[in-house]
Image (cartoon, rainbow, N blue to C red; front, side, top):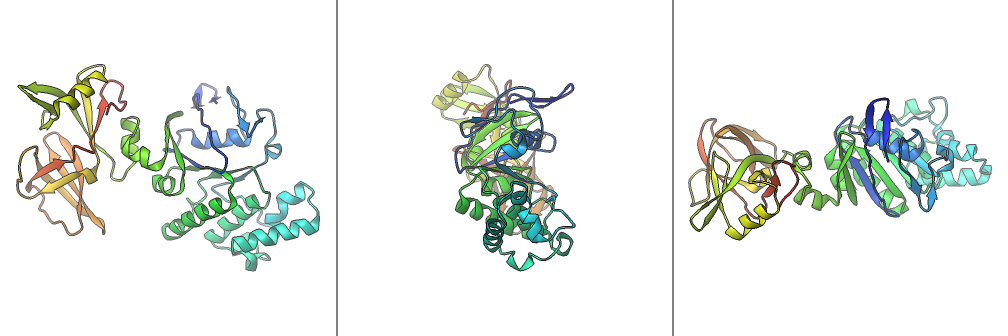
Length: 356
């Protein structure tokens, strides 16, 4: 599927297969094309190329109302002059569902979402979380084949957002409705989704489960986008010293297994690589414990409650490590770093694709 606005390519040859009852997040920074992708599925935008199927139906030429999808917007898009009941019942009235059935379906969904006591109120009398539930209720009441959710939690405060994440995930599992969820918040995507489609600059970068995305990013962009703080990157080459193989990052050298070095070289187009290491895979030592340690200097220490983020100066590089809560160090203090070699990532410098 592709979409251009004049000379601007908003969605560039994106192909995704979402399984029945699956929860898939479209994740990426602002302007990457994820909302346009969702609007193409909904029929709110006309695609430039490609095909869209819902089940076995080709829906390219179907209007949004004929695609049997329900969309929840970031702004909730509730009708301000209507009561909660009428807002939830509106899509059923449009489809001329009998009044008795409409009332029953609205009451059932209102009970499911625990908004049955709010049915006589107007949207302006509701909190953000209540409006979100009503917007979801209006989508659920239609019994659609697909839910399309466009950053539905972004207007909520942090505490309510965490609560609604769990509620949405539970609700989707109970209803068993195929769901595509747009977000720029990686925590939302990682905690709620069966799979995540990561997008950047109109292109699909990787589609995978949360654990696979984190442990095996397809390229440096995904590695740097997934995870907080992001992955550290060091330019390096592989050098041989006698029987020893070394990852040489100029500011430090790490000894690696010669067979591993050979495997990395065989999968790459050159001898220039990028070493990726997540902050939690860096251990900060106040005193040396042995070989394969990296000399560093404390740049700044950031306590974040359950752990401490330690910013380190390693020659020309600034890197981040995650230390235990209560870790103390002075700015400028000399320390040693160990990288967990079992969890490091090697990327081809030319292509920025994962090698190992």
